[in-house]
Amino acid sequence: MRIGVIAIQGNVEEHVNALGNALLKADLQAEVIKIKHKGSVNSCDALILPGGESTTLGRLLKREGIASEIKTAANSGIPIMGTCAGLVLLAKYGDEQVEKTGQSLLGIMDIQVNRNAFGRQKESFETMIDFDGFDKPFNAIFIRAPSITGCTNKVEILSKYNDQIVAARQENILALAFHPELTDDYRIHHYFLKMIG
Ligand code: GLN
Image: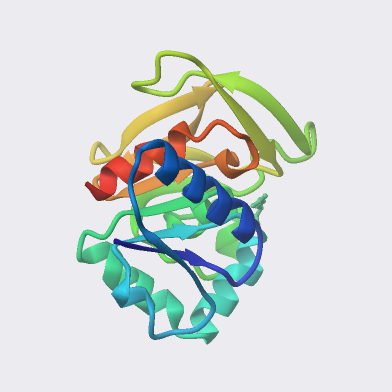
């Protein structure tokens, strides 16, 4: 099994470490590679799209030719997890700011996002959230986090915080508004590993 972490910008090492720990705990083996250029996405059995800055990430993914590879991978059923800015990129629809600036999204999940949902009031915070299927709450770290403001019935809501959707799944695509890679609780990476099967 090979898992690719898109390594253009953002929390790349943290995802690599969290994956390593989750694999160890689950007694599974996988090769984890960092993807900076086109040509390796299609060799992966799963992909992680880390947080960072979604406008920059979107632009670079397109320029590097990785964006179209990710879309093809998504269509072929490869599990993809997007966190924070990664969630924004997964979306089909943006908010007013996203639409106005015409930032490029991958558009592979039937969700609408609010890019900086928790923006001004609270730049960064952490809080315990309930996550579907988890027996104990998860300590979620939000950093200029987005939220999901709308979705079709193909999308399963996995977590809400203050009435805002902060985690959801559509078949092989998993989107999180917070940063599971910044904690030492690897349950979400483990959940993702189970999606790979
Ligand atoms: N809201 C930011 C954006 O749209 C994402 C922040 C993050 O990934 N920590 O780019």
